[in-house]
Length: 270
Image 1 (spheres, rainbow, N blue to C red):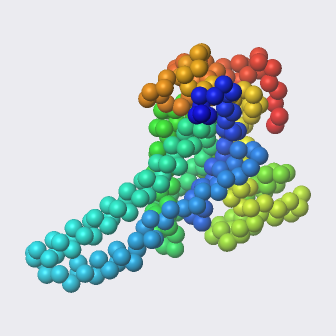
Image 2 (image 1 turned 120 degrees about the vertical axis):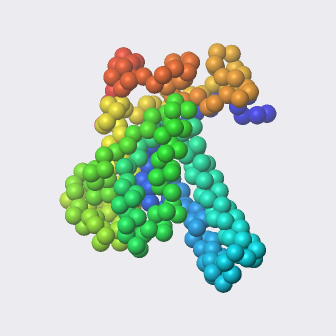
């Protein structure tokens, strides 16, 4: 029997997440209890040798010849394939976050500035960090989730998620080599990307003025059950705010949301 048609409601995982984007790891997603690591696709890197070979073949063709046009077409097809592989990967990642998470916190990366570094330019372009943020910006509106962009000056990597102390060793290009965050104040040790994801999540909670909701508040009724408000054909997944309101409507402001949660008896755990 289908799990969604069963009588017991399914429970969502914690859906307020901090997402740290990077190159060695495409994303580290932390929901307050555990971290999920998303490996990068590296579509351009995997096809780089073939692209270089096609470029050399094109350079040897006589200008204006039919063989040159054929070589240009072969190279264009490979570029298109690389683009499709990257887009497919980013769409799956962004859709997964927008459909299942109510609050997504991202850092405001200066992608164009990072691409000026010749050592990182190819990897930054291959990762598609700016495209992922663009997709999340409109998909969060589609599915009723909230996208929070942390300030560009927020030191998510340099802060200790345990005590909040700032580490000078994680700054600059030298800090990129440090894969472990070792706090000199409290002595705790974290993975660099996991520590950043935890700090981003805390930043989002502070900016929105909300607290993590208990698991019982995130129940989703099975499709087709009376009173669920869901349709079995062509229905988009309901978000946390849609479940609370019972219908799709404009995103409520933060103050009204906080007052509603306070009246329901939830207390801050921050």
